[in-house]
Image 1: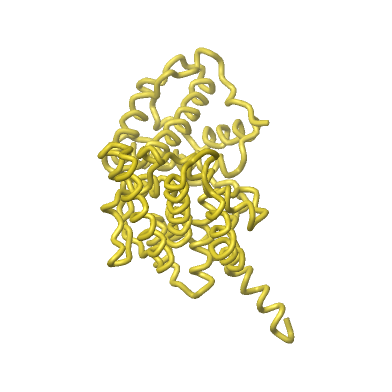
Image 2: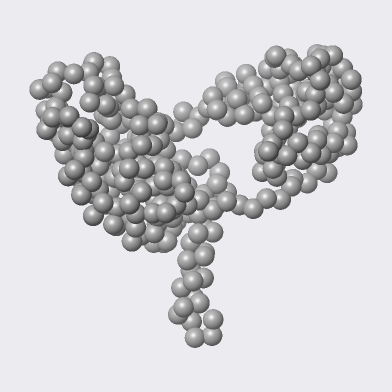
Amino acid sequence: MKQPMPHSGEHSFSEAPLPVLDFLGTLRSRRNLSGHTIAAYRTDLLQFHVFLASHYGLDTLEGFDYASLSSSEIRLFMAAMLKTGRGARSIARKISALRTFFRYLQEQGVQAGPVLSGILLPRYATKIPGFLTEKQAEKLFTEVIPSGIAGSGRKGANAEERLFESERDRSILELLYGSGLRVSELTGLTTGDIDLDAGFVKLTGKGSKQRIVPIGKQAIQALKKYFEVRRNFFRIDRKGDEGALSFAFVTRKGKKLYPMFVQRVTRKYLVSVTEQKKKNPHLLRHSFATHLLNSGADIRSVSEMLGHTNLSTTEIYTHVTFERLRDVYRKAHPTA
C-alpha cells in the first residue's frame, strides 16, 4: 500500500512556495490547462518541495536557491518515492512536472542548473486500453441496446418518461462510440454544438480546446429521434428550465447530466457484451479509436478527432492494432 511522502510536521506546507504559485498561474493563463491538470502539477511540485525542506532541514523554502540543486537531489527524491511505494508511472509523471517547472524558472531568469539532464525516467509497462471487439460493438448496437431500450425506464415511470429516457440513452451510446467523446465533452454539449444536417459535432475538450468531429449515420438517426421525443416530452410535461435545456443531454427534470449518470447508463448496456473490468464511457472512446485504426484510418486524423495534443498519446492504440495484425499474420501466413 502506498505511504505518504515522509516528512515531519514542520516541513508540511499549507501553500506552495511563491515560484510554484507563479508557475501554476502561468499554466492557467498561457497554456489554458484544465483544473485537474493544474492540481496534479501542484501536488507533484509540493511533494518535491516538502522533500527539499526535509533534506536540507529548512523550515521554509521562500527564497530557496534553485541553482544549488544538483541531479543528486533529484535521484534522492526518486528514491524516497520508491521507498514509499510510488509506482514507476507516478514517478515519471512527477519528474516530468519538475522538468516543466525548471524550464519555466530558466525562462524567468532564475538560475536552476541542468539538474535533470542526466536523469533517466523509470521504465513502466504501457497500459493498452480496453476496447470492444467489432463483433461486440455490433452486438451492443443491434441487439443489446434495442432489447434493453424496449424494457427500459424507471419503476413507476409513465410512457412519455420511458420513451424520453430510452431515446436519450441510445443517443448517448451512439455518440460516445461513433465520435469518441470524453464524458466531460458529452455532458457539456449544447444543442447548438450539434449540426445534424452537416453531420458533425463541435467539442470543447481539455484546456478548452475546440475541435470538430464527424457524426456517423446511426448516431445522426438516433439524435434526430431523441431531439424530436425530447421536444414533445418537455412541451407536454413543461419541465426543466431554459438554461438547463440548452444542454443536449438532460435528465427527465431538465437538468444537465453529470458524469456518474453517464457512467451508470454505459455500464448498464456494456455488462451484456464484454467482460472488461472497466465498463465505462471511456471503453467506447477506446473502441472508437481502435476500430478506426483497424480499418486503415490515418493516425493523425484519429488523433485530431480524439483531441489529443500529442501524437504519442494516440500511438497507444497502434499497439492494439499491431497485435491484431500479428494474429492475422500467424493464422494466415504459411511460414508464420
